[in-house]
Length: 452
Image 1 (cartoon, rainbow, N blue to C red):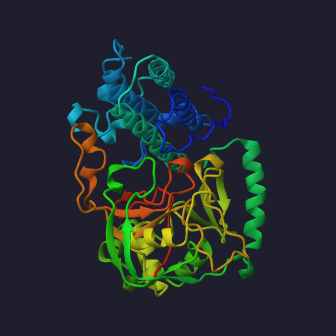
Image 2 (image 1 turned 180 degrees about the horizontal axis):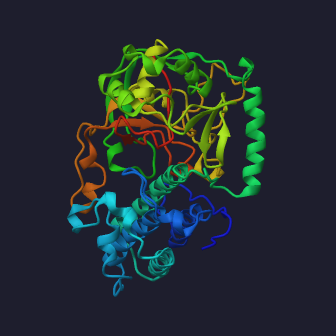
Image 3 (image 1 turned 45 degrees about the horizontal axis):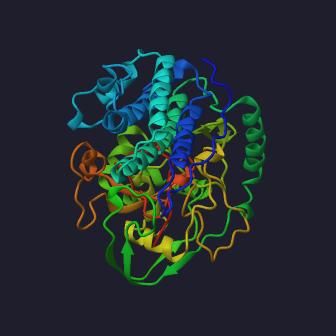
């Protein structure tokens, strides 16, 4: 099925302090929903069914699951007389909500050849029409409805990031190493990347690295601005931090390559025990998607296999690799409270950076003459591992019902990441956002910033 080229739907505006109008909610809803379909535009129908590993879900499943979310939590509750699209879709496309019944095993999502892609798109159209009709009705909505709608928008944006990263992993497993983006854009990127790779051997292209001081003291942590946040970003609480220093930018591919060439993957002294075991078991020699060829290192990207850009931030590293690099470099990873305190101290915003909307799908290098006295790349580019377990904030309470399963039940055996990535929708990002993954995961755009 030919979706055509990726359109550029308007970015949904963040929710302000004033109650949004139904028209603005409808506009935001359409923009978010269109973006999900647009992300699948370059794919073949066959691409949308593949599940090469447990962590990755088929694109077709993402398109259907996000639609099930709207149908289940809003339309069935608030749209009188709503007729569900198919009685079996709740079983097929529930993700992990035990409160809502049984579901297809996560590892079996790739076996769902049916419903066909065109049926999933029809499902989306059915739900979109019903939701927009509800927003266009004369009905007065409660604050609870507004909160659910806002949650639904951000839930779908979470899946847009997963779509971008899952698509990359899926295509990387093909021996053909296919490019995700269209040929014209890909050719422009190839030319630019080859030029950068050819020049990147010059140390002058790597921006200077420095460590910037952050004063010690008592800092409030958690969502402090107006607008949406997930429940795991609350309640706001105070932490006492000793003075520390945070690196002014992300670690580059050149710097990580130096760790590799110094034998970093062959010296147990830098590694946590579990990490060293993984290195041995899986023969890790480099970040995910790196490939060494006769003419040097390359990386699989959304634009196909590309020469390694040494000046760009390193990404697709596990927590274990990030921690080992930090140990080798004589530094450490920041804690979650340190990262947030520093981001507020340095006035980080999401105005710059590389986000999903750019369609670059790769973290971009800083200019070689970037100011080393300014803290940069805090938001956007790639998620930054912290040395903090994903635990509830003091005073956190799970919500009642199915939505209480959204975050709270995952607060164990995972590490927190901060900052957003080149696959995160820009309006979905904020300083207090807490992402979380097990320490071994590498398929997300995960990178490294040091502290000391």
